[in-house]
Image 1: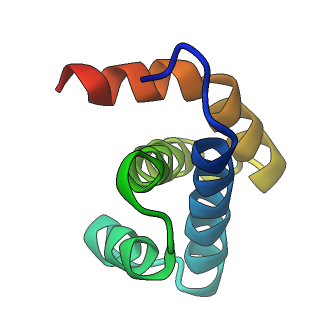
Image 2: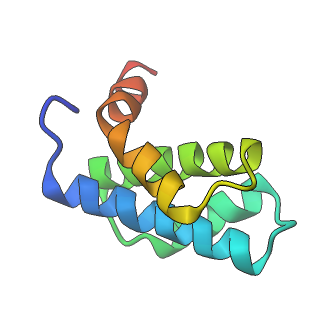
Length: 93
């Protein structure tokens, strides 16, 4: 799935990470479940793009919770640099 990431999957991942970061900024005490449900409802991607988006959102949220001082740009770069790894991990689950 992640040997060569399709542009629509990559775009969905970027959008999902952005949604997580914006939601977390607006509602910093929201639960992980609440944030991921919000992203799931608002990302219009389908199929593998949606799966990639949700995996990216989950990774971004996890990283941000462990590193609350991390800047949004850092979180986005980290997730996108690991995009192939993230997509490979969901392919194995």
